[in-house]
Image (tube, rainbow, N blue to C red):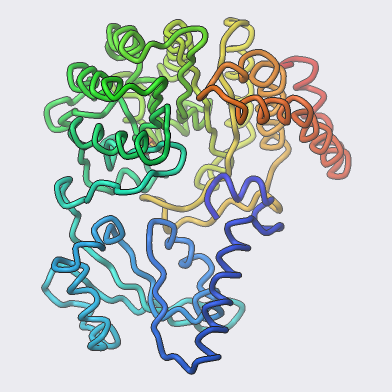
Length: 451
Ligand code: SF4
């Protein structure tokens, strides 16, 4: 039910691989329990469990005893610590009727009541409140997927639509990052390190003193110098902000030098474009722009793309369709126009843009999902259309074959993208014809003015 999944399954009209696999796994567990008469309690945990709030019928269907929320996952092996207490409570049946107002700050139980299709559903949510310090989070001992290692948790920028911002901010010291990369290199043969960050340009920053979110250049240089000292051929952070990238003019040139960015070693990074609407950016993500002001957002986007590209970084932008169900057609056109202006003013600019649907998390968790299958306006279809057109014309055809770690997987992926990249555009044009004049008109305007 995440933003990417909801976009590509038309708001769960189709089943995603993750949902299919999760369902199949629970059915296997249920069958095994039925066969043996086991009374084992099934608990579902980790950061995706917020989804059960929106489809609590699955809790009943899968026979889940409790949903475990919080950051217990990473420290579960410490059986003599919080995890040990968790299993003791579970074995003793303490979670069955735990006082929801208990004073201890480890676990709390909340029995939630949901109403779906006229039926009341009750489900047990166990919250682990403590936040592990960095030295409580054990290092990986086996290789991680795609050589990914975490370098920070949390982000101080406070975008209302993001739950990362609710987590306390913690940074992994460079030595810990190096140790994990070495596990990936030695045991997994990794040649690149994919640096999991929320906003990498916040790394090492103390948001209490850095009021304008000024990056801590020294800490970032130290981190990436340590990463490169492992001998990896390539590294790139997962996420970052445009404002962070340009707030210190020496930052990107210095980092690019350290990580050996070049025309043959482009650095891909996922960046929140969110919207071209100044109204929405001010309302929902004003600190994403700090130290700049919401009215400077278009300048930040253009300057950010220019600076990143000059230093061989490529932003992979994500946009939010239907942000808090508050997006007007004019807001959507602002997004289309901003992408088009970037293309016109910087014809060689390298960036991709992917429109994702709004999901209610973070400070907006009480809002409703944006249902792309039923609620997409003609202008929102325009955003989707424009982003795909940009990706095909600029991203896939011009520079995608130069990003990421080298190797056959990259070649294979690019061949697929080139041959299939145009299909979504045709599908959207057919969709517009089915929906009627207003939708068709949006496609025509984009082709005539913003192509
Ligand atoms: S900058 Fe990114 S990670 Fe940080 S709060 Fe905003 S959306 Fe979340």
